[in-house]
Length: 144
Image (cartoon, rainbow, N blue to C red; front, side, top):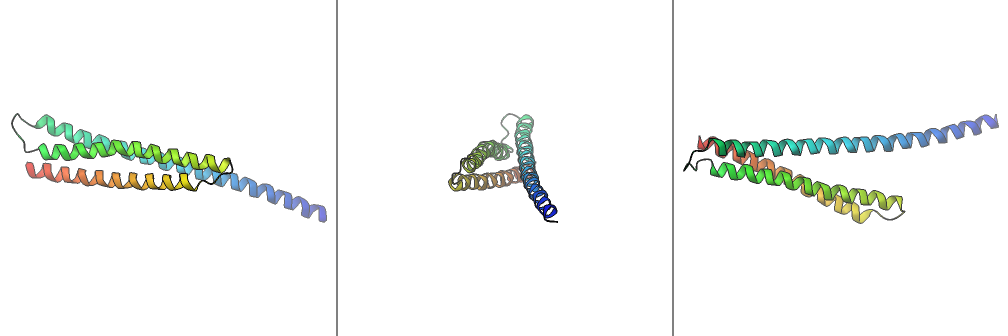
């Protein structure tokens, strides 16, 4: 009986270790999926805003300034989208630094704080980009 209990405990410890690894792998996979989804969303916004500015430039005639404000708004939105890629890079860099610190037995708190700050800034920039996009749409509609 005692041997069986010992074997049961070993199996239980192995199961716990496997569950922990599966949880970490699942967390990493979820995080990678979130990053991929965010990148695709930012690419889409960049394409829409850049395309809108280009389309308005293409339909503007010489001397016509009705769409000028809308073009600027879409252009600013596209620039904000491009800035989001850069801010996202720094966020991920600090996240990687935090993970490396944990692996080295150091405190990840500073890197995680920076990661969180860059992440917050990226979200604010994306929301600002959306606001400029909407303003560009409204301005273009009114110019028609």
